[in-house]
Image (cartoon, rainbow, N blue to C red; front, side):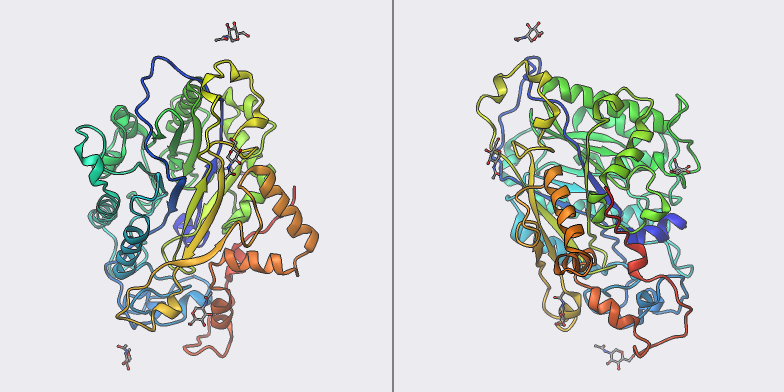
Length: 483
Ligand SMILES: *[C@@H]1O[C@H](CO)[C@@H](O)[C@H](O)[C@H]1NC(C)=O
Ligand SMILES: *[C@@H]1O[C@H](CO)[C@@H](O)[C@H](O)[C@H]1NC(C)=O
Ligand SMILES: *[C@@H]1O[C@H](CO)[C@@H](O)[C@H](O)[C@H]1NC(C)=O
Ligand SMILES: *[C@@H]1O[C@H](CO)[C@@H](O)[C@H](O)[C@H]1NC(C)=O
Ligand SMILES: *[C@@H]1O[C@H](CO)[C@@H](O)[C@H](O)[C@H]1NC(C)=O
């Protein structure tokens, strides 16, 4: 329960970019012909579809019509649900919002993306005693989202291939609301992983079905011979997952998971593949970090220390010790703030001589795509959102996502390398917490809902109730700019 309450605010999607190794051509592997690259990928998360959502009822009822008291911040219990969702409330997503999201993706991004990172939580929260969420419902919702992905991103051109999947690579990872009971995953194989495997079968590459059945993790070669995306199952690292016990004992699934990760990274290094890591929630993010939506990118030192603590028994440690990592935490579709998603641009200019630098294994880490702008470096992202306040005025017009900001325009970042993020952090610190840059940043942390939340927090707000002062959103957003 603690975790699920926390997650509602956290939008806790870590998408850790970590680039290891260097170009190396492994003659044992026959590379597939490279697809035409678009240089873009989507990161989307936390759909939380709720078939019980009712429009024009109080948020306090969780948009379920009947009264229900909760311990959430006051503003989240205020307001009336609209046809497209209830912004900045405790409510989950109405089906209309899920449909609008996929319609928009199909219309705007079909055949324009290279791959998709999708970080889980595909069912509503189990937060209403009157209609408890059954495992059947949870899996049904997960399957529904899966099918929408397959419909939306199916590529008829690929249909002629017999074996290859008929859609672009999609890499899901398991959210704590994708499992039952909440937060608990036993070592695999087990019924839960088997059911998830049945649902996500199309996304899991051929040789990795056993791995998934055993641990709920896998990787996909999203650009053959060039880039893999590794889906980490952080549930084996959750304290709340009382069925397992950390990453020290040899037989623990967390330990086995990390060993597997290490093997994958070694393999990638050997084959000259770059690696993006994607995961539901960071390794042991402590209480004080709750709610950090984007700021964690500045908290690299601290995060790295945590990461290293987890990895300490693993040879990998020595290799990453002096490096920083950037963690991109994605906003959610569920309207905890306004619904949002990100389209990333990444560098698809491959240096002509790279394939031939067989002996580049010794190339400095400083040349890696996380450190300098080179092939596969993320260049920036565009954050799209739906202004639900506006959308709800028009029940008959399906809303579209619009641009909220880009890292180029609003932060003047040329790329998303570690040095660029550090530079932005320095700029914020130098200009101070009254600067427009910081204000803008905070605005983005709440995906445009800052003034809405402020308004809802006013005493004079209609439907005002006499709740005790509970934490507001700012309390959940940590902005430690120390480094
Ligand atoms: C919403 O409910 C109120 C009463 O509960 C009603 O007066 C109003 O007409 C309803 N609005 C819509 C759009 O259905
Ligand atoms: C997370 O870290 C804190 C302190 O850094 C520690 O007390 C706690 O046991 C850790 N939790 C897990 C699950 O490792
Ligand atoms: C790579 O370097 C190693 C040691 O420096 C050397 O033994 C090997 O022959 C080199 N390989 C190629 C393909 O140049
Ligand atoms: C991509 O990387 C190459 C180096 O590999 C660099 O020359 C080029 O400027 C980068 N492209 C963009 C759009 O930043
Ligand atoms: C959202 O729409 C409302 C109503 O049109 C408007 O008042 C508000 O400024 C908009 N918010 C953002 C962030 O665009």
